[in-house]
Image (cartoon, rainbow, N blue to C red):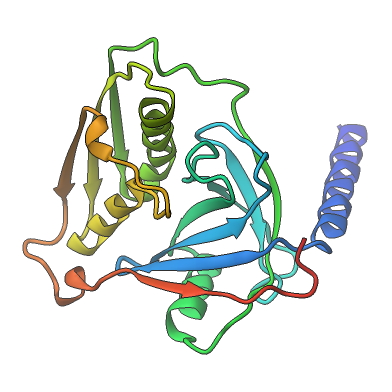
Length: 232
């Protein structure tokens, strides 16, 4: 037992060391979208030919918040729709995410933010076209993996003219302001994408608020960042 504990400890040290080396290279954070439900979407620059599959996950480190903490988040963007951008949505919950949301929502003068990433990693392949109907059920920020799936189907329908399945998205949120997460389904891009090409039904349920609060009608705020000298 002691031997295996040592092996696990050494593997942990190796993992930390590799992440430390990787964190020395930072990616460019192009913009953020601040949602009224205390969530943010981070938009990173990526190479045009870099691809990934829906529901992929990426680890993120922000040294100004914590030099050692890495947190995994589901990618919401689609490499076929957004050729030069990679996005993740982050809901404020724990200490790290609360600090990130506060940093981006209250510091209007901030024009740079150093970010390191690891990944993305995810399924080797996804075959959604073999189904007649996709039933997607989520609660709160759990909608983020399904956003990437819907964007993938939108790409197949718009660019490749594929026959896509009917999509039924059933989601529940605690507050009315959290409905703003649904706005992330359609990517913000200079290229027009008609979501009406998809047979998409979205059913949203509110479990806590009995009526809309004042902040539930606040519009999404987009902030743009300058590149850091260390960005790759």
